[in-house]
Image (cartoon, rainbow, N blue to C red; front, side, top):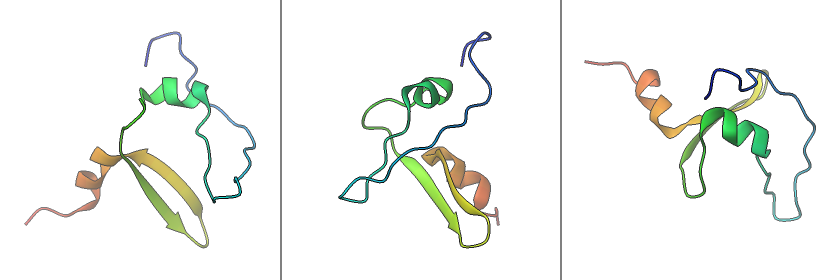
Amino acid sequence: MTDNAPRKFAATIRIGSKGQIVIPKTVRDMFGYEPGDEVLLLADTERGIAIAPASAIADLIPED
């Protein structure tokens, strides 16, 4: 993310007929997502859905 890049973004997006969503280019640029990158999808029926870099899973697993 560059210093002048937006830090927040809001938009409505549509779920396609195959259940797919498109992450808007502005957001992909904000987080440096490229085609083929893996992301982590977190879902909670009370809090909603979040998408994070796949590397974020390391922060969710407690160390022994």
